[in-house]
Length: 265
Ligand code: ADP
Image (cartoon, rainbow, N blue to C red; front, side, top):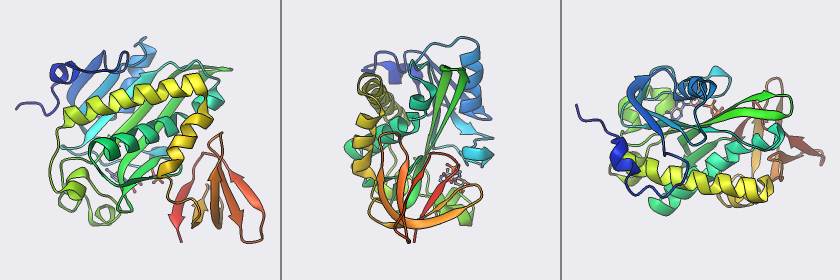
């Protein structure tokens, strides 16, 4: 069977200088983030990519399952950030901005970012992001950005009913399939340039651009953390990536990136 992602074809004309110079591809692994973490420990250089056609144990935050059938784009990029771990925690916004830019600018999709780590289209999840880091004291040993995009399948055909009602795919949105290797090439180029923006101008510059997709700002939302629920008006996302939520009693709560999920009320 011909692979859906031809690495040499992808690398032809790749404009990124570091991201995607080395790409490891196989049909199926448990999770590309887990694979990339193993590769990082073995010394893989910044920009190394692990990409597969199927993940059998894809995961989101807190070990939540990320369903990853054939036809999607499931990949991870290895980074060796020089920033302090607190600033490197902003990589989730680097990934979200890069994905939103590509899906919008290259494919014409109307997308929005959901704080902190998802990209939606038509109010449904199109792309999931999972950033993981290994730190020693004040330094980041390596970081892995994992990105999963539902691409060339219709969600109602491949996902269980409950998930099909909250997810969407490029095919569902555009009414046609696209080339996975072209999408990956564009994402790697964009990721590299947004990552460079983070290194040169810091997280506030990335957040500023990310906010143009943040349609939830100005809306009433519900934020769920591990053990509490808060409702309020989404005022802003500050330069550290924290969400400013105006509660009903008028106080402003600063919610840090963590185990938080957002819901429009
Ligand atoms: P959250 O939306 O709470 O930030 P995560 O980022 O941890 O969640 O992603 C895991 C959740 O995403 C799962 O619990 C499931 O609801 C949903 N999900 C799993 N696979 C997919 C997929 N391929 N497309 C869209 N949503 C998915």
